[in-house]
Amino acid sequence: RERLSYDKWSDGTIVEPTYDPHCVGNDIRNGCEPLEVISADRLMDFTRGRAETAKIANALLPDSRMGNDAIDQKAWGCIWEELLKNKNGPKTAHGKPAGYVDKEFNFSEEMLTEMLQELNRLTNKYSQHPWDTKPTANRLVELLMEHTLLLQMELDEIKSGARVLKYEDFLGPKMWQTKRERREILRMNQWEEDMDVDAELGGEYGANSANERQEAEEHYNRFSDFGQHLFVKKRRGIRIKRARRKAERNA
Image (cartoon, rainbow, N blue to C red; front, side, top):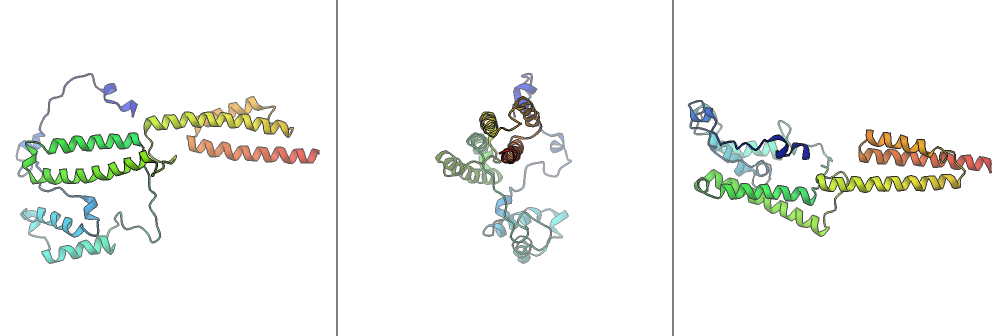
């Protein structure tokens, strides 16, 4: 994220807001202002999905290019139920095979805080003039506040320890750097322990510790932190078992 920061790509020039010329002319009928704001989360919700489907249909009906071909209103709910609830038709996010369980990922406090700041910025913007009198802006604010509440609950769980972060979660650059440094220290300490075990067994790879360390460093640069961790752990176990078998044979 640091490499993509604004300061690295901007010389400080202030860019004045502009309006897309296609929206000013006659390229787009009635301009570019949105007709409706649709929530994908609500569309896929079994309680609110029918109402969200009706919002889509009602937005299309006034346009003769699509409204004349729209199916009868009585069938709107049926279409939603068949596609999303009964999973008949094209695959959707709900159309997973039976028994499939989505893998959940958590976000660190740093990343959740950034998300909340952006949500609050958008909420404040579209709650004020000239947006506050537009139904679409009011709907957007409603959805933003809904997401803000969910993210705040998640952030509270992270802070309290109720939600525990794992290595594969989205940790953010600050926490990721801290974990990387801690893992490097643990890895080097483990090498010292391996040398001690090997020396006690009269092993041969303690004598080649300099080469082993160099090899580990090369692999460390080649693998991800997690992959390196598994690689070193597996190799360490193999070498210690080999040293023990050799010691048993020489006993």
